Length: 210
Image (cartoon, rainbow, N blue to C red; front, side, top):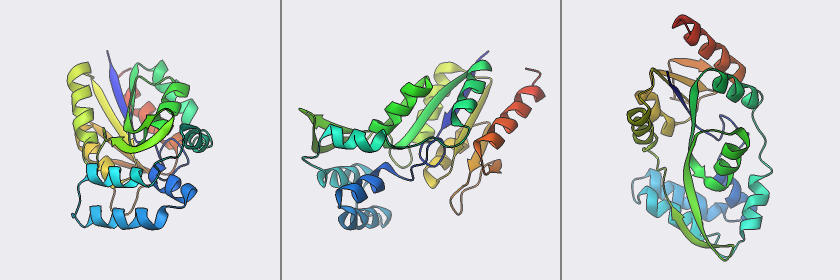
């Protein structure tokens, strides 16, 4: 018996709002980055182009600089306890992030999750090339979750997130949980903490007779 849970990362499991925004602010490129975001949301460029434009602003920065930021990001209260609880209850755990793998990979490794999907900055000799491997675009979390469901055939699928790009995975899940959701984002349950997420899942498991 397999169960599957998919988490957004930033604002859900960790106290980062956006890898992209935080690196722009760290490297002093936020003004230009904001312009690129406006172009994307106006439909004038696609996600791949947006990602490359953003990354081009960081060309020449080192992997060490990026990881210095990634390693400074803290967990949300209750994240580690929730993951342990899920492992004890036969869940396969996935992180689906439209942020960057430098952060998502670190968290996935530390928590020991089964799957991690995020966008990868491309480095050459430890330096940012300005290119991105855009594995998770603004709509594709639902597609990724559907593929995991097809592979694992879980008897229960849960999705947890906070933003618009989590709605596509909410649609693929049996149960969706929105944590401190952005305006206009709703799940089957809307909560304020990962402790509440754990209680909802505990109730779902007990309701299914373990």
